[in-house]
Length: 229
Image 1: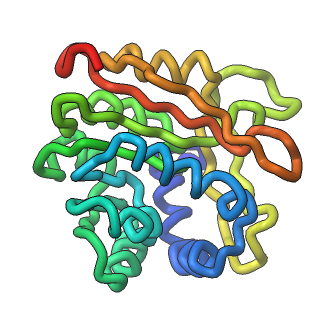
Image 2 (image 1 turned 135 degrees about the vertical axis):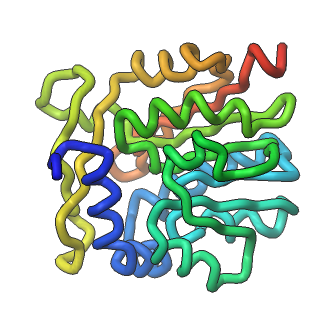
Image 3 (image 1 turned 180 degrees about the vertical axis):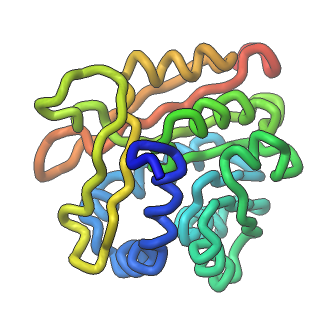
C-alpha cells in the first residue's frame, strides 16, 4: 500500500477508530475543547439549517451537538466501527460510505448544509467530493469545511503535497498515523471556486493559549445551481 495515499488514510483510521472515539468523548483533544468544536457548531447553526449532512462524521459528536436544533441529521463515514459508535447514541441517521461512494450517489436527499469537519485529508477523494457536494445541497445551501491550517506546513515548503502523519499528543494507544495531503490557502479557495462555489467566508479560529490559528474554516454556496445568496 502506498504510504502517501487516500487508501492509507482509510487504513489508518480503521486501526484507530476505538482510540479516536475515546479521545473525543473523553475531551482529550485540547484544541477541540478550546476552539474548533465551538467554531464548527456555530458555523453550521448560523445557517439555521433544517437538515445537515456530516461527511466524515467519525463517532458522531457533531450530530449529537446539533440534534437539539436541527431536525434532520445524517452522518457518513467510511469506517464501520466509527459509524457503529455513532449509531449507539440514538441521534441522527448514519451510514457507511466512502467519499467515492458519496460521489457515486450513496447518499440520497438534499440538505441545507453539508459539513466536513477535519475530514478532508486526502487528495483524489477530496477533489471528487467537492465535485459531488453541489448535487446534495438545497437551493441556498452551504458547504462548510473546517480543516488543518496551512501554517502547519512549519519549516516544510509551502506547496501542495503529501505529508507524513503524526499522533503526537494523542496518547500511546494510537498507532500507524495517517498521512495527509497539504493544501495552500490558495488551493483550498480554488477547490471551492473550481467546483462552482462562491466562498462566503473564510475564518481562522485562534487558539487562546498559542494565539495561532487552530484551523481554517470555509463557508461556500453553489453559484451555478443556487444563484445569489
